[in-house]
Length: 276
Figure 1 (cartoon, rainbow, N blue to C red):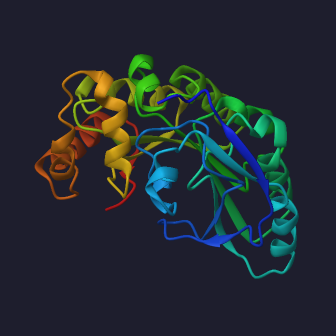
Figure 2: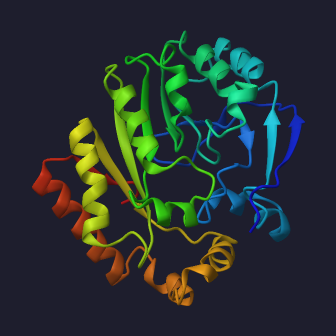
């Protein structure tokens, strides 16, 4: 797939905070629809209306130009309390953020609000730009690391910054006293599920002093099609085995969970599954 082409449209939104179904997150805040990173496993595409648009994930972004103003009105109303998750179906620090600065403006709004906690998840080192606004008392920050192998990362996360830059950014944020975590996921059969691959991620978590949250590949609508298209160049990848292997009750996943837990326990790193 050609990820060099990007269609950008500017839209207005009616709502900023959307009730979330994710565990431990009450409201989702996504300044963009779509994501430049074009990760082949992203479940965000499953929320789109049609297959053509879903398989174009990574080649279009809708910019919600007024989201920070809507957010300010919503938080002033006092109706929104609890945990706000920034970046639940898009990366809030994808490359366009350096131009539009919508995530920064939203973070600025939230940095002055009580009765909330904000959790940010990203694959981008651009988050370092906003450390002046990310207060340790209000925010925690997670960075997604599927693998430290940059060759694999280029295949499954074609336009995301390399893992080494993400780790460096997370370390910078952590050194400022902000609670940090690594999202080790999705763990994909035969790509990033072996002992050494997991160990390298855990080693970085130990060095930084952060915890690990991990999860398996979730084959929501159109994700398997996306992966099939991308992994054709990876050789004889057994794509048709994924639906069976990635069931939450599968023997493969039980083995991977034990592997992650054992490595983290041996290295003294806290870890927990994203979903029980």
